[in-house]
Image (tube, rainbow, N blue to C red; front, top):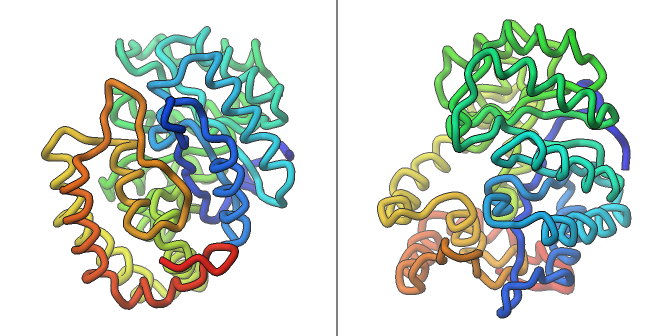
Length: 322
């Protein structure tokens, strides 16, 4: 699989969940099938082991098994691939980058170690250590509030100039419009990506793509929304994003109110349509949402998204229906 540059990195990328069997081993056949479906839908790339991939609950031996399976499945496609490598310390991150490289995937999503916040002087050393240990890797910085430090656009431009081959993009985990303006405006050489809550405003400001949790729920709708943005049809694209934000604020907040987050939300959303194969299981101690609440939300989803559901018919191979 190719090592990406900032110019290559663009489009809608699917955040693929980690599927578990009933004995909590990785369901390799489900992972392979879900990747095949992503290619069928026409996404630009697929990534694993960010928050929706439960990186925080997967030890290194399991990570190795998962990434090897992911790499073999991705090699059968024409899609680009990336692996999330965030961990609590630099050594753990480097170990995970080496696993990704061994699987043929040089493109990595990396946040700063998240449990104990880095001091500002720690940041340059962090990137220096990655560059020295794994120079062939390509970095997309996961700019999440959970990592405590959010570099400015000026700082990103500095690091991109220092590591022009390695530092290729960002994943902007913010809905602050002024913040997005500052980052993209001051570091235009990087490929900046949004996610569902900010993808269209970020695109309007020069963002290159969407790291999407929603494309595994309503694939055609998500890809059409990005296509509208690429064509400069901003009102239509923004109307669709507003509808999604309305849904999330009214419904997903019920899951968040019960303490659920990350992969639990992703797997709950995926269950509403069945666009991917997944048992719904998540790694302890993070239990899935209550089945009764999931069924309640699924009923609401089918009403709220009735038209979009109709347009998604026959999206899965073999004529599976939502």
